[in-house]
Figure: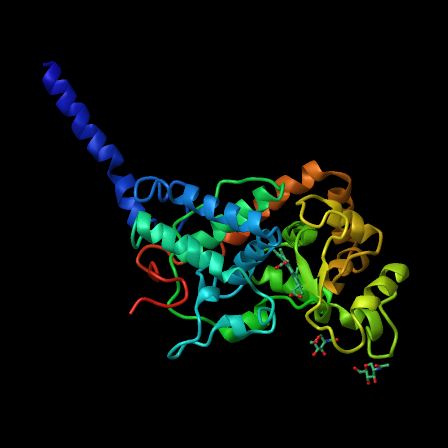
Length: 332
Ligand code: HEM
Ligand SMILES: *[C@@H]1O[C@H](CO)[C@@H](O)[C@H](O)[C@H]1NC(C)=O
Ligand SMILES: *[C@@H]1O[C@H](CO)[C@@H](O)[C@H](O)[C@H]1NC(C)=O
């Protein structure tokens, strides 16, 4: 009798857990944090340790990795299209205006991928690595943590035009930037919270020079920029030359993930035009900036929530796409 009962329990558990095993490969279009729990239990630990090593070597790497996930997700969804090098019919997104001489951290992705291929070959996608590395980078710099939904697969193509058109430029208007977010299913709350990423990392002179000298084509600087801060910036970002010279996006706490970015915006010391317009062009956005500037404890959880939302942009799931062996090229 006891034997029969345990046999019955065995059969019932088989039926009960079958959908779980099934879902690992056919996740019906949605992502979930436990995706690699059975197929690669050490996946998250491996990503974290390689990211931690890279960030210990260079603090800025956290910012660079966080930005890669954004630049991936806004182009054909979070599918690691950004990581493909040019080859055959593929024109790399690395050549686009937002990425050229700017996007970085690709070698760290290579290191993570090769560690994962050793541990569990052909299992963890490059798109998921980007999502995990973005989370780990945020945590390492003092930001919030969150569970990363997983199960994205990698694209077999890239879109240079998508990269040029979908990713907002630093001199886009507030309306254009908000429209580009809305096209990805993100709203004004996501826009303001995710812009808070600029609490870490650098910008090149060329990304904000226009503000310092000739904001609207009349030879005048941007008057919404604190004028003594502007004068200081001009010393290292001249009218011509020095395009690649680096500046902190948040000069108060350069490598700490906190709300000081929002405090700087309220002091007219946002570095990029796209930062400053969050307080000068929309009452709704200004109110959000004020809220996050006043309450780090409101900013951090909203950032985490918006990152999950961004990470859910059009993933390839099920049998769509592939698991690349090398993040830089499609499988042959
Ligand atoms: C709202 C529209 C946005 C615009 C116009 C924008 C624009 C820029 C620009 C121009 C730079 C400097 C690039 C350079 O000069 O090399 C930059 C850096 C950065 N961006 Fe954004 N960004 C936006 C939103 C975001 C979002 C949503 C994230 C992440 C979720 C993000 C994360 C970063 C980070 C971390 C850096 C520093 C990267 C580094 O130091 O390597 N940005 N962004
Ligand atoms: C924005 O910057 C780009 C690149 O520097 C420039 O070609 C373009 O004219 C600028 N757009 C506006 C509206 O100022
Ligand atoms: C400012 O930009 C406008 C148009 O982009 C240009 O015609 C003008 O010569 C520039 N002025 C200066 C002082 O650089």
